[in-house]
Amino acid sequence: DINNEDLDICERGQRGLTRGRIAAGPLAPRFEEPLHRFNNMLADCMTAESLATGLTIPAGDDGSEESRLGTGLNPTPPTIEISS
Image (cartoon, rainbow, N blue to C red; front, side):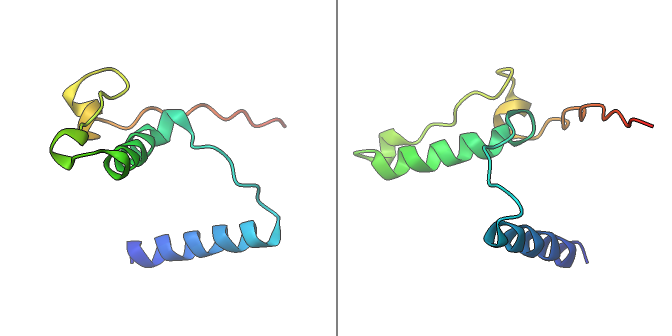
């Protein structure tokens, strides 16, 4: 069920992008930092002279092992103020 929900959300997002209703933007650094680091690791692997020396896992936001591997708690989402 969760996978089907994810597929639906991704399909809606793609439709919005192709119709021009949603503008593509940068990654949200607070919530997508592990994804950004992973993309950088892929780029490093693709441009390294040797995978034996070209693959490193960069430090996370705070340098902890949990942050580096993406296993820590998710950050608290920002508060959304609703005007009445």
